[in-house]
Amino acid sequence: MLRILSAATLAATIVIPSVSAQPAERAERLDNRLDRVERRGGIEQGTRADRVEDRFDRAEDRLDRREDRRDLAVNNGRADRIEDRIDRAENVQDRGENRRDRRN
Image 1 (cartoon, rainbow, N blue to C red):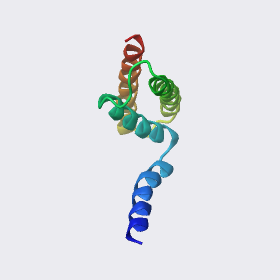
Image 2 (tube, rainbow, N blue to C red):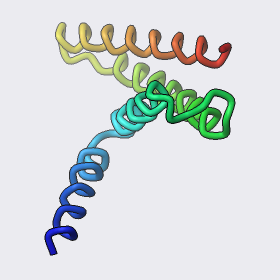
Image 3 (cartoon, rainbow, N blue to C red):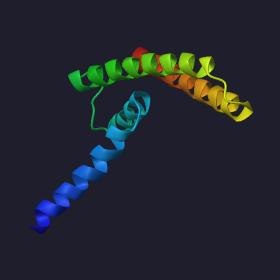
Image 4 (tube, one colour):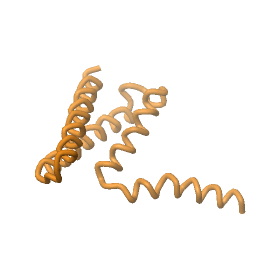
């Protein structure tokens, strides 16, 4: 019984935050997990898993650009504009990292 309860609790802590987040946030969370696995050496360069991770990065980049366009269309004041600029800068940096990773 304790094992089942522990498994259910673990599953809930992983699934619930991902389901309640918006698509871009879910993609970013999953990408962060994949990046951690890759840094630890769990994904070898040039393998099928590496190509899947690269494709996921490109899909995340498309989501980020779409989110940037939506954010620019809505202006909720000075703080919103500052947040939009920060998000845009992070997305540009991520795309640059992804391009460098593809070249290597």
